[in-house]
Amino acid sequence: MKAFIDAHRKLYGVEPICRVLPIAPSTSYEHAARQADPDRRPARERRDAELCREIRRVFAANFGVYGVRKVWRQMMREGIAVARCTVARCGFRRSRPVVPTRCRPCIPISSRS
Image (cartoon, rainbow, N blue to C red; front, side, top):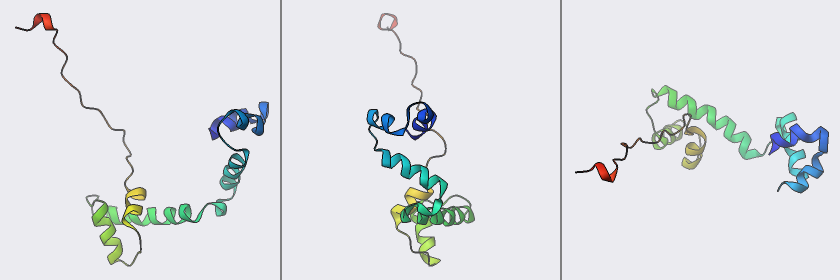
């Protein structure tokens, strides 16, 4: 939605677009302010950015084979206080799309024996 607002801001203005879309104008302005000044980001978002670097470091140091639980345990051993769900949220997002399994082609009923 933010990209749409940015693309049509000059033509229509923010408030008229926000009246049509389910978004408050203050949300749009706050998003723009956060992009301009990263210090306005919420504390959780800033901490997640720091922790994501540490999570990637621990994951890479262990040859990329550690899962959420082992990365979390290693970080606790190193003295980095982090919740396990934070490790899961920050460090293990899918980078590739999930490829669906391919089923065999259907055989028409008339050709079955």
